[in-house]
Image (cartoon, rainbow, N blue to C red):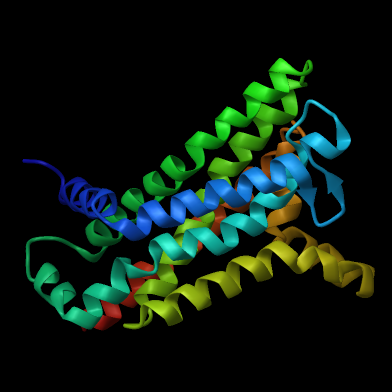
Length: 243
């Protein structure tokens, strides 16, 4: 007999591929990502055309902020819509556990974000055609992107689980992801002791470290811990709702 989590994952993936919202969000993500790749990020890093460099630095610099907005758009309906329609109660009457449900929905949404990210590999082509890119930061950037997607997906399903309103789930997901992304901008104004703690909480700091091709176990521990924290939080919310 097939694992219930896998069955739920397949059901959610089918819903994902039949939803026009998923295609719209993915297309918009690629447009925005392309703009940052070719033209730069917030005047901090010139893009491919402006700097005339065969690299993806501008794209990776903007990626945490981009994903902060787009991943919650993909995850907002996962629990919120089912809670609003009452179908989550029907699902929980089946021989499945809260862990099965959360695992299935999480895996489906995580795969959905990776599918959304996949076409950005094409950015390597112009870099290779017009130069000789350093593949260390490129490989590190995409590895970091996978871990970033895993963490932000966990945040997205958590915010979807705590409300019946998709818009609230979307905004809450964006708020948490952006806070974790932009927290490092506050560090220069804080005492060194506080900065050290908050610096470890910054998703962008850890992602930037990996995207430079630096292999540091602390960065991967951060993303794994963040994912586990919000995954466990979602399971707890579902258990409380059932009670």
